[in-house]
Image (tube, rainbow, N blue to C red; front, side, top):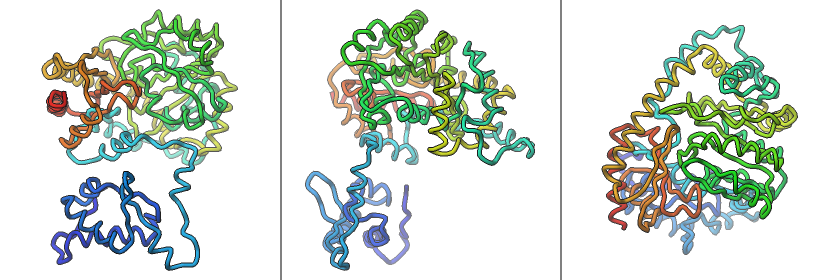
Length: 479
């Protein structure tokens, strides 16, 4: 977030910054104990040189409002305010630290902030570029809405009935046969995982997943003290043969997998492994969460049938979303599974937010039932294929002899692994200084210290080329 200073004012810029920070402190936005942004971040926020920020912080420190902590940055001190009242100062920082949900890693927090910076090249972003989002079509759907059919109040616990009927028909086209009563509409796939973590699993449960995995970048399960165990992954996807041994050694209460165009590697689970995984699940009584966020985004040919289409025993919870194919802002996803499980998750969702947006549910149903979903998918696949091929061409041109990667058959991602030792954290920082955002592999596997997740879904083709070229140059310098 940028804060505009009055550059034509007679008040020096450092004094304006001093006053803004002082107001945040005095109004309780930055209470005592708050760690303020770094000088580099403040310089970025105010669009000034670091020396200007330093001057402002020096003044505030001299006034007793700030103090530097060795290795801990600069914090708001309570010395000044505690002297003005007989009551002790509320320690909000202590509350923040004691919350049971773990915070994002500092790298993810930095990525979340920098993604909205002007002119940044986003090589790691897992969403469609703005120009690929269907603004005009969605506008027409909303304009053509009949007031009598719109629902602006609360919906049923499982979601709008018509929307669930449309989704049931949509899933049938994938070979998944579920009734509307076995579908729960959620606010994106991420909420589905949150509901499952608190609604179906006990504390310290053992959760199996691919390694690397998107799940490692989240703290949904870890915050509930659950244990994550990684399973080997190659170009043919997760290997079901190792599950029995892992369960025997660590236990296994659940398996989370992204079989089609895996995040972050882009790999696709082979059909024979899918069939084997279903058999293993049946033999071990092991529930599976199938995350199929990218299944419709095939670029060369459709992937094998989803695991849920092979599931005759109700062992698979199938999670889908429109965030990757239509719009992340719509915030509509779904879970399909055994009815008692869906009832349980629906009850928890009602306790959490009393249902997803009724307007978004209606728009999603109209989008799918009208044929616009299938029509728009063709356009998105065509554009993603161009971007993927551009990314692969640039990798060949600039990363040749530097790293290895596999051609993804769909989805958003290419998993790039450097051939020689390289400090990925340093590469991340150097790229950021060049206005390029990359996603270090350690976000998805702590041991993936030589890898990055490259996304071709957001950056334009020209930005892909410039970004990949610069990152390659930086990597060679670091080596």
